[in-house]
Image 1 (tube, one colour):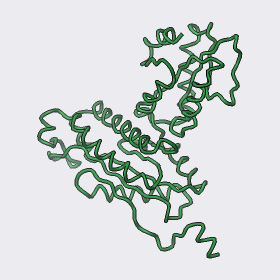
Image 2 (cartoon, rainbow, N blue to C red):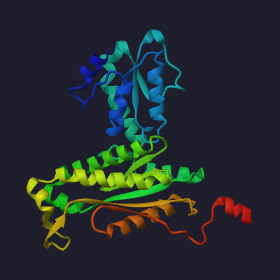
Image 3 (cartoon, rainbow, N blue to C red):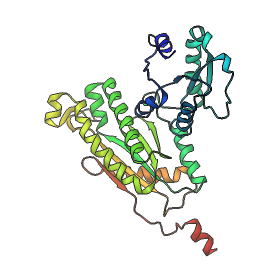
Image 4 (tube, rainbow, N blue to C red):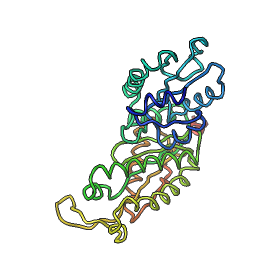
Length: 306
C-alpha cells in the first residue's frame, strides 16, 4: 500500500517514502512537511503512539495527517487518533489528490506557518509565549537575527537568500530539539528573524551551539572567491559601494525567573533589546539579560509580602 500511495503522489508533490512513521520522525523534525499520509491499521498501536507524541508537540500540532483506512476495520476512535482526515483504501486512487490538497489548505487556514521554513509564525509564537506566562511557567525566550543578510540577498539574489533562511530554520530547530526534546518551541517571526523558547538553564548552551554550527555552515553558501576573501561587495542603504562581512547571527536571551511579566509583549521587547545589544558586537554572539529589575518579585515573594 505504501508504494501505491507514493506512486500516486510523487508526480504532483515532493514526496518522501518511509517504511513506517518512526523512521520518518527524524526527517519531520529536520524539515517539517506540509502533510503526513499514513497507511494505518486499527491495531497499529505503535504508529498511533508515535503520531500522538508528534501531534502533542507544540511545534507540530498544526501538521495535518491524512490516514488511509481499511473499511472492514471501521472508523478508529478519533479522540485518541490525531488525524485530520481519512480515505478508505478502495477510494484511494479517486480521492487521494483532492483530499491531500484540502488537508494542506485547511492546515494553512487554521494554523499560520511560515511558507518558507514551515515553522510557526507570529500568531503561534505569541500564543505559545502567553500560554507559558498564563501557566506561570519559567522559561527563556531567545530572539535570533541574521546580520549582513541584506548584502547577501543583494549580491546573490532572493532565491539563494531563501536557502540561507531555510538552512537557519532547520539548524535552530535541530539544535533546540537536540538540547531539549520536550516542551521547547521554535518560531519564524519573518524574514531573517527567529525565536526559540526553552528552559532557562539550557538556552545559553543552545545559543552557543547554534552560533558554532551557523558559523561553520554559512560560508558554504558563498561563491569560492567571496568565501576566501571573507566579504562581499555590495551597496549600502545610501547606494554607496561597500564591502560587507559574511553573514553572522545575533541572539538575545531573556527569562522570567527574576522578571515578572503578564503579557507576551513585555518579554519579547526585552529579548529584542538584548538581540540589538548582541548586534553591537563583531561576529556571531549571544547576550543574556542578567538584570534584576528592582520592582520585580516572584509570585511567592509577592504573596509572602502581602
